[in-house]
Image (cartoon, rainbow, N blue to C red; front, side, top):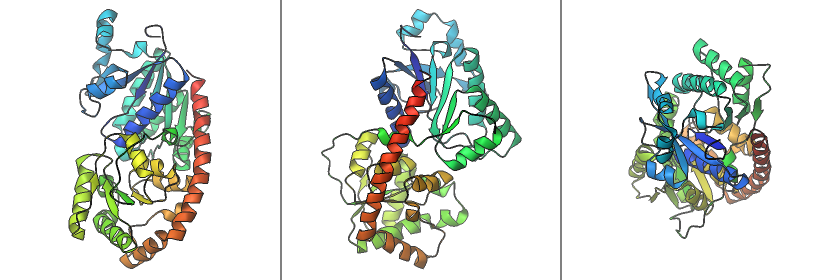
Length: 382
């Protein structure tokens, strides 16, 4: 308890990546509507992705995370007087009642072992302090090295519940701990987050959301073809009457891709760089079609019944489209230019998009109910 109320730490959110920001907003807003809780978030000295003004505006207390040479020196703040910490809105692990981890996709050999090691250390601390830990719906794995497998197995044994967004992640975790009963499937929870009213008009009806991870987390073949594919997709769509625009979901590297594609087409395509993820969700709702390689841009669109295409750089995209019953809208960039042209023309046809919209609305209803069920499980630990 902190100041007479339960204190919930929502960790691994940020403001630079719009998807991570949307998860942060979604978790805080839902819990705020369900009880009189206080909230904290982890603040690192190594990242500018959680600026003070933004986290304070959201009402978060600050829990410093001073990670140096695989040691968290943030515990030293426990030695300072409580009155001092309260004066600056600083909390420590001893003040926390429940931790919600909203990493999205962090615990995997694909990102290295440091994330798993950090969570391994933290869960040991939280267990000693009787802090309940919940890993909110996210993707996991693979875990191929002895070290990552050992760390993740220990983590599974220490947390109350791990929600997995897809069957592939579920299999990775179940293989590590086949007897565990705390590995539970659940969809990404941002599908319940409402959009906000925006007066801004979109400059077209086809939204393109690029992702620089398509250039560093994919095969060399896909990496080399990505920009050319986007240019081809836009050109074919324009021939079919679509008016494209880019929407930036994370920073300058995604913007660089948008600019490169525009130059390749010889066309000045409009770009929207909106910081508020709820406004982004509202803008996506106005589109007729979205091509997105940012995971949460796809959820924001598909949960509102907006047809989407994507290629993606990890298993989470394939399973997302399967969850929404539109696997046939996934693009294989490694195919030939002629095959891609045939595929694109078939998918952007008006009758196909109408059919897709109906399917998405039905699937969205089921996904949202699954999210409500997930929150009911979370609330048992609050």
